[in-house]
Image (spheres, rainbow, N blue to C red):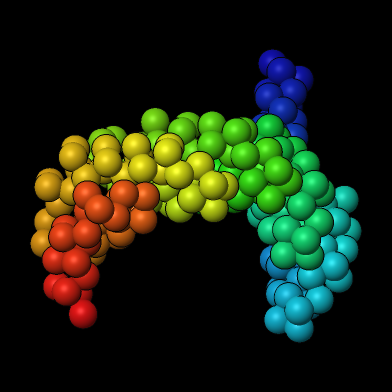
Length: 207
């Protein structure tokens, strides 16, 4: 009986040590990530994005933290190393699927665009739009329309803007009416003869 009790106590002690060690390991990883972020930011402030990327690459070997991969992709893009930024972002999205939030996916779409993968970038934006309820995705759609214009996809941009105008803009509260002006500008950019009066009306309201 005594031997059995001792075994139970030993198991409890070992489990406790294990969880304490896990907590310590998580804390150490967080500390490494925080230190890397702070150091890299100094290089970023000086405009030295390649040095910041090297900091994040070294940190990536020592810790498992999604912030390291996310920030590494960001500084690689700032250093105009777009292919590397895209690969790092793809790696992070596979490794940390729970972190695949709006900001991460928007960055991924931008890296795809910069790498010349415009159709894939458009698909990522569509995935983003599909993840949000109808009344909450106006900002994402506006970013998507801007992206389409940047990629010279004016027809798609116009169709998206027209959808926003017909289905969403009229629902908005007064403090969101600035979106109406933005969408009116999108429509006017493609078909000025049809939307000139509307665009001028909203433009005058905000001047």
